[in-house]
Image (cartoon, rainbow, N blue to C red; front, side):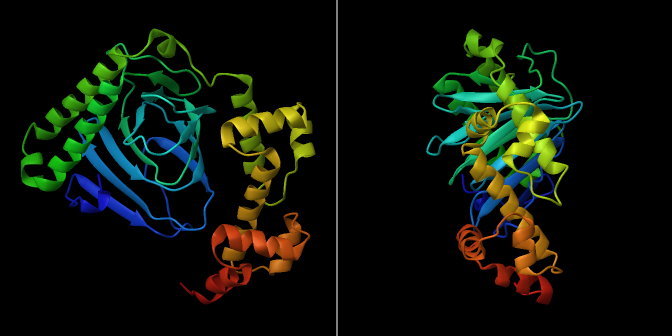
Length: 316
């Protein structure tokens, strides 16, 4: 489904963004942080408001995501197509499946070009339908191909209905009926799931906890670079263990991931408009300025001086 083909209404909102520095994913009831791994984007999002939940469609871009489900919330997520790779909580999607989580459940996702997702976010914890209960991380559940396609088609139909027939959608009982159809599709999908997949919480392991600690340390030290030895000493594990956890949950080496975070730190400082390029680069560990300039331009599609000029003079 092309999100750009949907017509907004009182119940249906659509967004499009081509600016990395302005993009914000408008999920409610989830705490979401992300690090882009590309220079340019063309992201689209649609949000359908229903009585007890919101349905989301998102055509996104290569990035690393950290998210946690908030209190009194149930999260359901699934892909809308099969033609792109996906890694969630260290596992590559290689068969039909969906994710489910309640308050406090976290997930780390590695998205690639052409990613298309749907999410159903309920404003309460669903406890009366026999759904698997997640722990501190999302539960990843294997379902049948038929159930996965039914979920996708029900979601597409709901968005088309709100777009093409907004007056009918606003009639008493219409939105509640749409919500019930979505609930039924989720019930059907989870009823088809394999018992082994329902029972396991595949990310409740040591590496997930280590990846969480890495993010917490980086977030607490935004004004200074953090290196592998610092992380290993603070977390109390070897650098090799840090590398393995990062490779599993970020899809890249520890060195490359820390460099990416430092690169974004430089960009944030330049976008503030009050720093010299050399000062920012060296402060974040990029002492070889020629190499830094090449890496920066390759990642963001512009030179550091162009970023600084846009920030200082309001250039687009």
